[in-house]
Length: 385
Length: 178
Image (cartoon, rainbow over all chains, first blue to last red):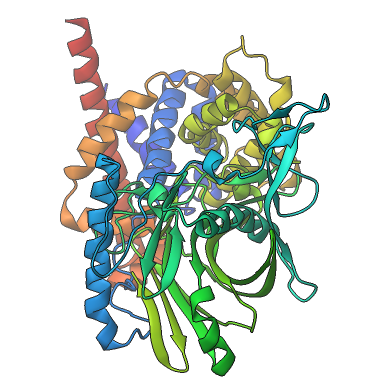
C-alpha cells in the first residue's frame, strides 16, 4: 500500500512538473514507463490531466487586477447635456415599459414626442404588385429577399418582388461586408422614418430635439452573462451570432443600432459644420479557445433621393479587445456630415480571424455605454445615451 | 463559403458542447497548454470541414475525439522529440484509455466546490499559473520566491484539488448507489 502511495506520489510530482514544463528528461522517461506499464497509473494520469484542463478552462479570462476603463470618459459630452441625457435615459426606460404593455394608446412626452402607431414590416409596403397573370395582389410579407444587387432590400418572392428601399455606396465610399449588412437593416429604418410611423419590427422611433431616430438596439439587450458585467446599468447589448466563413477562417457580425433623420437640420447644414460624435464600449466573454476580437463603431452619412439612398461618407473606428471580460474597450468616432446628408446610420460590428473564428460564439460579444451626439457649428443639437 | 451553408445548427451546438472534453482529451495527449489549444482549433476546423460526413447515428463525441486524435498524431509527426511531448506509442495507448470520460461532468462539479477550499496563498499562485499562464520563473519573480518553492506549491495545489475532487466524486457516486 505504501509502495503504491509512494509510486503515485512520484507520479503526481512528475505530472505536475510536466504541466509546468520543468520535468527532467530522466523523469520523463520514468513517467512514460509508468504510464505504459501500469493501467492504474494511466487512469490517475487521466484524472490529473482532466483536472488540469478544467483549471485552464475555469480560470480562463477571469483576470482581476487589470485596470478597467470604467472610469474613463473619452467623448467629452458637454456638461450641460447631462441633465438632458438623464431625462433621455428616464424616457427610454419609460418607453420600454410602455412598449411591453403596448396598450396602443398614443404617447406624447412633453420633451420627446413618440409617434406610437405600431407598425410592422408590412405597413411599410405602399405598393402592390401584379402577378404574372396580371392579378394584383398583396405581397407575402413572410419573405425577405436580398437581391444580387448589393444593399437592396426587397419583400416578396423571387418571382414577385417590390423594391422597398436600398442604400448604395457612392463612388468614394468603400463598404465592407459588415457595412453592407448594417445598411441593409438601415434601409428598413429609413422607410419607418419616412413613413412617419413610430414602430417597426425590432425597433421604434424616438423624436428629440427635432431629430427622429430609429432605434433598434433594445432587441439586443441582455443582463450579465459569460462573466461579463454591463459597463453601466443592468444590461448591455449582445451581438447576434457571427457568420462564419469556414475556409476563409473569418467570422463577423454587424448590428444596426440607430438611424438618425437629420433632414430637419438641413438649413443648418448649409450654413455651418455638422458633426456626429459617438462612443461605445466593447467586451467579450472568453472561453479557453478564444482570442481577441476586432470591434468597430461605424457612422455613415446617407443621402436619399426617392427610394434610392446613397452612402456618401463613412467613418469607422475599430479596437481590438483583450481577453479579459472584466475590462471594456472604448472607442469613439466622429463624422463631419457632408452637404446633402439626410440620415446618419450608427452601427457596430465584431470580427474574428484565424482558427478561433471557426467557433466564434462559444461566449458572447458585447457593447455598452453607447453615446451619440450631434453638433452644428459647435452648438449641440442632439444627444442621447 | 459560410459555415451556416454547410454546418447545421445542431452540429454547431454539439461541437460547442464538447469543447471542454475535447480540450481535455487533447491536453492528455499533448500536455502543453499552448500546443493543445492550437490542436483544438485545428480539430474544430477539420470537424467543421467534415460536418457533412458525420453520421448522426454515431456518437458525436467519439467521432470528434477520433479526428482530434488524428490531429494530435499529425502534430507529433511535425515535431521532434521533446521533453514536453510523449512518444507516439504512449499517445496511442493514452488515446484509447482517455476516450471514456464519463466522470468528466462529476469532476467539473466537484472542482468548483474544491476551488473554494483553496487557501489564499495557494490561490494566488494558482491564479498566476492557470489564469495568466505565467511560467514558474515569472511567478517566482512576481512573488519573490524561489522557483522550487513555486513548483512545490503548484504540486501541492494540484494534489490537494485532485484529492478533494476524488472524495467529492466518490461521495456523489455513493449517494447515487444508496
